[in-house]
Image 1: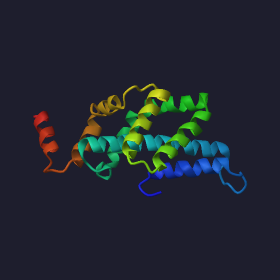
Image 2: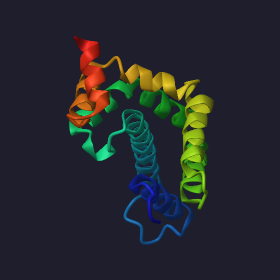
Image 3: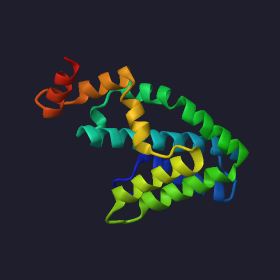
Image 4: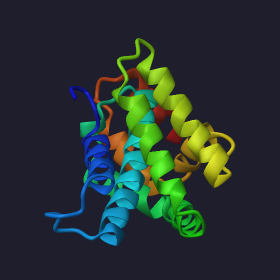
Amino acid sequence: MANISPYTIVISDCLNSISKDKTGSILDDGQKMQLLINMLQGRMLEHIKQRVSKYYDIEPSDLSEEFSVSLIEVFAEIFNLFRLKFEEMPSLVNKIAKRIVEVETKGDLNKETSVNKLYLSIFCKYFEYKNIEKIISTLQTDNRIQQAIFKAIPDNSSLRKSYLNQTV
């Protein structure tokens, strides 16, 4: 599974483990579901990080750990809603996980577009966020996230110069 998120690989493995014979597994079904939920949250954060990186034309790996921690804090409310939805409808966990694995492992020529549409539909349909760009714009109001993004932008970048001119 080249160029597939490590989260997606673990999601796929977890789904396979849940559907297979339960003998020999060190995790019970409840633990597997919690792992699956954590991986889904991680993959969603990773997707947002990729979108932010693309928007600012920087590599996701250039964003600091501070960015990731701030992102988790900003999304705490969303993930509370996420967990509540899963408690109300446990089958939703598998449904979303299967859809992520299906879309992200398909050899689609327009994979990026398909993945973006997938996460937009997940946020809209299940978590009542109608516009993923609104989520990204919310990130632009968080000072810690903006500082982490600014630090990741190369010094000679026109985007960095533009950013500096806006703050002066």
